[in-house]
Length: 179
Image (spheres, helix red, strand yellow):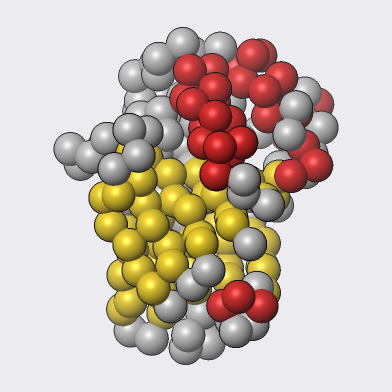
């Protein structure tokens, strides 16, 4: 199975369109959004084609395929326009293709709870892509599809078999990690 991870859309209809193109062309089973879906927040410039209303419509169009966690820019009012749960601070997945290892999904703006060695932590928030093992945990951050930072391009992550690969929208692999 193929899973697509993305974060920090920040209301960019442009980025959401690009992400849905990747979602469809990759034939991903699930689209996992790691928070900051609709609003840009006070520290960020407006992203390309900033349109939270259109962005929410696009997200709702694939609601059956979404798993979402709340980012620091989400508010309770967002749930009024989104037709899928968006207010949980974290989610847990177990995937057979990763030998049943726990995947802890969160935005990244709150401290991690105690986690067992071998846990895969997938978060956004920093807008900087990461794929590394450190202190017994695996860390994946797909970067940001709308407001990338640290000199990186807009990016997302695909999990295919046992490999997490972070790509930019031209299809160039930026980094990968096999579990």
